[in-house]
Image 1 (spheres, rainbow, N blue to C red):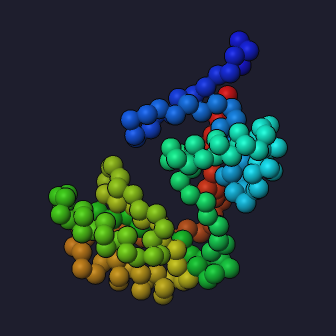
Image 2 (cartoon, helix red, strand yellow):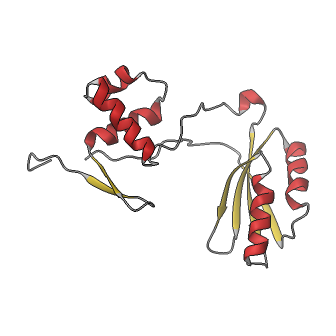
Length: 172
């Protein structure tokens, strides 16, 4: 803030409005991503606001869809899902009917934790968690059931080097 004025970033929403994010909003987002269990008083103190303005900002961020939910993160190893598999899917069908069927089918498999339509040689990329290779084989059989897939390639993660759920929210 070289000019002494409060700089703001404009977040272009998918809705018709733009949401202006100032430094307090960005701090709220960073703090809530690190620990969403903070009380409003604790959050307000960390971001330099009093409780009511902080609460109003959080509610505005939720209403605008910037904050999409509050969750508990679970240690996969401690619940017996220590294997991560990345599955590249190629298809020779690119029509809406096939995509709708495939997306519905894959979305119904709870072990698929992420699912993307890609550009390039891979059409779809899935992140799957499983207990072990035999468990993945069970999931794989479920994946290829009832949907025609041209090619499936699976890669097993050997080591997780970085993992975060935080979206980088730059300070202004």
